[in-house]
Image (cartoon, rainbow, N blue to C red; front, side, top):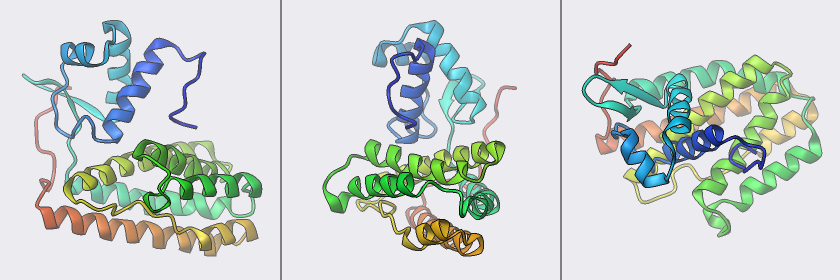
Length: 232
């Protein structure tokens, strides 16, 4: 699972994992300045692994560098949201179509149960637990497409989507996205029906997009685009 601790993990990877989780859960807020001195004091990191971790996060567009400000958590704009969903509709739907008939039935059932157990309605999960379980569920589906590059792109998009969801949760006192209604998707994947699986994935993505845009526009929380100057 993405967020689990591996005893073989090197220090820079551990720092990267911790910071990435903080960013995806919006504990480090979009647009927040994150100078190295603050991160060292807050998390107890040493500078060498911290700089390595920040370089990886910049590559993933979760951290950017701005003149006179240094490192900041990448802001989220309406344009970002539209781009993430547009790409999910193009890539994740196709990955789901390709995965039909190739998923591991017992593994998928176990992962589905883990996500459901982490829902607030079940009373059994934190946001971190839900994020990790949901990530693992989607990771198994897209990896079953048997196209490694496609799976990598899709999982990066899902991480950016998770950050958008958690940002929305800071705006409204309700769990707008903590649901898991994948019965039709599961059935189609297990039946090997690619078209039905793709249609179920598309409906889920479009439904999520609608809720998120409504939340963001209703709160007037975001700029239309990120227009700040970046260092090259």
